[in-house]
Length: 432
Image (cartoon, rainbow, N blue to C red; front, top):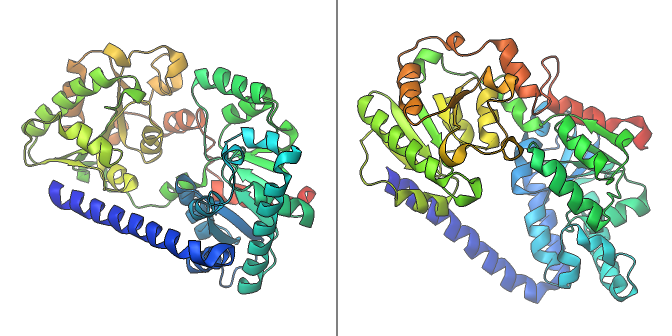
């Protein structure tokens, strides 16, 4: 099973890069007109606008933004025109100097005479692109929505939008939960002198709004907390009954960037031992990507038949079927709490960090009431065994405690969807 999944992933990646190389060769011949034709063709292929009566919004998709866009498509009346941000970046890099390709710092080149000709070139490219999009879909673009405040890639779209009087807005896909980020990112933006030059910003939490306010990147009166549309996925998904969830999932944190590689080895050892003791349950070690898969594979000497090491299983699928999810310092654990899974997080060895570097900490009462924090190695196996021999979810947390824990990290209302809040944000009259 593992080898089959690996080969499937490799085949998909090989096809993807083969397409990119083919595209690169073709566009050297066709130039900018061919690039624009391809972007418009790809946008029309992906966008779902038939019969909708809401605003026409041009989005600039990046990989981690797609889940938000999909929920907006599903739950609102917005006409979303999905421009592939990866392809746009790919084409812009072919004719822009490196100085214009620096996140945040590109802004300093806007008023530099030595770069004006390049920005004029970007402006013309994006102006032509937007004209052709409107011509092909038969709709006027009324908003532009991007996923980050300081990416250089959509700056050409912002320049055109400003000239045409189209509100340029950001739905920020990043959610800054670490106390350390409140200091380091604030310092970064203040040092760069960066200011968001669009009309409005939507953020996932009060923490992100506070950071942007303190960093002086934007007027707090023009920032709105909408939460993350991607989490709307869990509002009406049919979850298996607790007793029918026959999976335990460990989301890997083996890489040193997670700051707890030693603890991961301990957790994985306990995880594998419990898999041997519970042959009627499926145990998944979910790697982040192919490289992470190989890193973790080297740590597994032998495994029982009910243990799967994989990187291709979609995260929502893994969470949905899991009675227990174990991980460390990942927003995947927040999503697991939203999905009502039981969550376990280590707090020993090198995982016992200062609260400044932890998303979840036993020193936060709202976290501690919902999350099981492992204080010693033996807590891991004991908790897995306990969860697999308990038949009711109510043993672990109340609904009020779950919602309080979630809302301490991201806005997740119970009376309306996050997607509708984003639609309301875009339709606000004072943007006209």
